[in-house]
Image: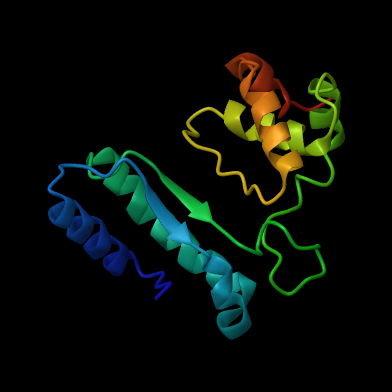
Length: 159
């Protein structure tokens, strides 16, 4: 369960394709990689994820999967000083340049969804909805087009 071994990931991709009788999986999900943090630490987890991502990129190039993603329960939602913290808390605050570029959106949740769905090459943004307000935020963003590629990439230019 929750194995982050490139060979095992390959096995799971091929096993799933065979069981479903398809040439390619639309998507492959790495589920809750943060469960490894208490045992191996963040640094080792990130090294393991790096090797898995290399293997997943190869699977995309080979046409065995369409895309891959990470699904996390705690890693992206907890505060930065929490032991399970991995990548941030976009739903609670926006980086200044993102807040400025997406000022037409009323809150950090909508800005985070729009930022993610505008990312070139990103096919899916998984949004946790446990409250009617979360659904309202997600639906509000769906009603507007993603940022154009040039506008999105300009968020990464230096001042």
